Image (cartoon, rainbow, N blue to C red; front, side, top):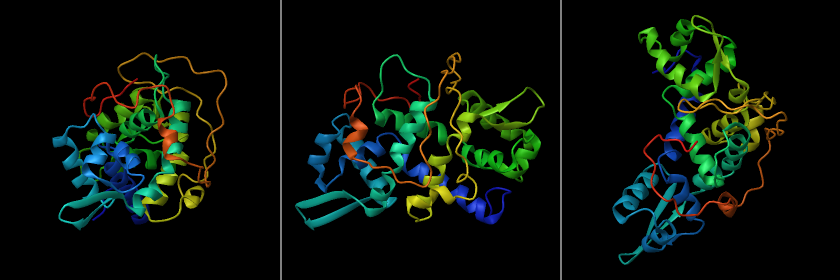
Length: 280
């Protein structure tokens, strides 16, 4: 059954990307995948993610096994290992694309963030309710009124239900409007998501990431972001006078697992954040 009012192929694409984001966004999932650069016993893995208590790591591993990102191998009753699957390994080159976008578009914090924290912040924004469908519609249609957007994003639902997620995306800086009653459109920051969303789409469809540049919706955008992300809880900051060049679509970046831990923040988080919280 269709989830949106978009054409079937596009609707399926939005659904796949939404599902992919739901797999990796839950707190600590990406960190666990990065720790599994080789199969590890439970205690070995726990030592690599010491901020997770025993009662927290076990359900996380079960969840990742259920989604097909982690494989549990029972060599014998006393020897069980966990390892990242080929599916998870294929996802990892998407992470540098997310870091690049975050460094260009998210507000700069007072203290430097590690690349993994940049990824986690960005994923929080992208998993807002109906976010993927709204971004797809605005990219395809250009400027769209609220009622027309509701017809495509949440068909069959009361049209005003589109406004809470839409306002959140405006507050996050991914969507802009000229005022009440005016149409909505992607901001330059939202347009800058093209390499990320194209890559996530390719991965979720089982295609190589080199296909991201040929995505029918996101593959043709090369525009660099021109503004910093504005968060709903903080005032907007002045955009930089120069903008770094965006990552090129259609190219798989050279990636190393340790690169995501290369910034100046400690590898162990000082405290767990509330679900959906932002570090900006």
